[in-house]
Length: 463
Image (cartoon, rainbow, N blue to C red; front, side, top):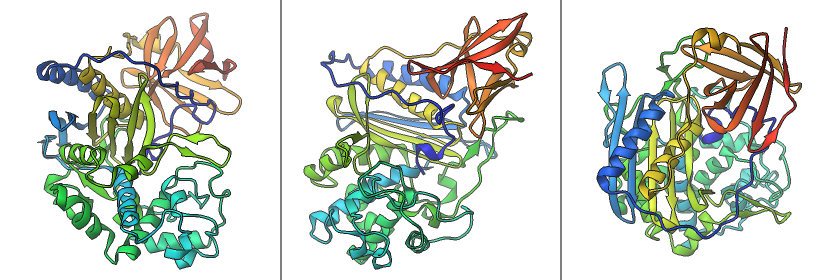
């Protein structure tokens, strides 16, 4: 239901991410003309479709002016139905923006307080949630168990089952001590919305937030006709290179943490309304987009239902979503009043969609492109690198998949390798991750991994 619910990044457990750079004076962008924007987005999507992706819909706006809404590829491979601007996708954890906005709207109306302990609204958690507030749930700092409450995601479930499960589990850390992304917390918030408003969660969203903005396509996915929805697909990273239908999940499992579907255009209009203060008051919106301050004084790149990051030094807020068969991204650059939405129905790693979203933003702003080379590599050349390399904490297996190489650390995804020449590759899902092979006698003997300027000791090929 979020970016990290999609396959994990290569060596993510072994290497730390680079910190965000401080803001600095930025050059004024040279916005693309509509024709140039469409041409640039077409090219960016064409590169991403080789990842591959089954279908994509992209929407871009500057201020309230929509610059582009366009679909690419297929919404349904079996019927040949094209992905269009009207295609509805599962948006996964972008749902959290709507849940956070619902809570903040109720706080504005005096029906709850952000510093209310959760036991006030969910008495079942009084014994487990001492000191845990709604603010902690909104910012993923509650310390409640973050493990899935149900083992079978396709089996019928309900938000109350999550409440009952958390009541029986120990907490993981003290409230406010750490940031740990927690879908369970947002499912609890949905229950809080229901009890504070006296309405079912979906009805509250529809009547109080969505209908006034005329966002008719945004709704729980099981309320959207199947003929309008994109089908979800998975691209195997071993064996077959053909996409297969993704496993379905019961809507009660995702609930207010990831239950919604939307068109790219309606999601674009939601982001614009949120930024303009038409969903919640500007001061509430500012809470959503401000970095969370932990008890230690350190900050986390998350506010309330919003991820907080940057693009080429420009502030960027938004959220990604990931469910089986779907990866999505909705981003807003406040300094440029630019909104970008990218919805997909089949890709093996969420960071590929993030890269596409950033590429679209660069095209809209007239910023330099950040395309990554992928040089040809023949079958005999590929064979030099195939093998298993021992990193110590884990092993990395390099193997052929179709006409390219993939690398798979123990227990993680198999990411496609983009050939840079001279035995150097970059990971498709994260081009800042380099794999450098040292060869001897025509065969690679060592693998060195470098990520965001940090290097690991070389891994020896396992005999």
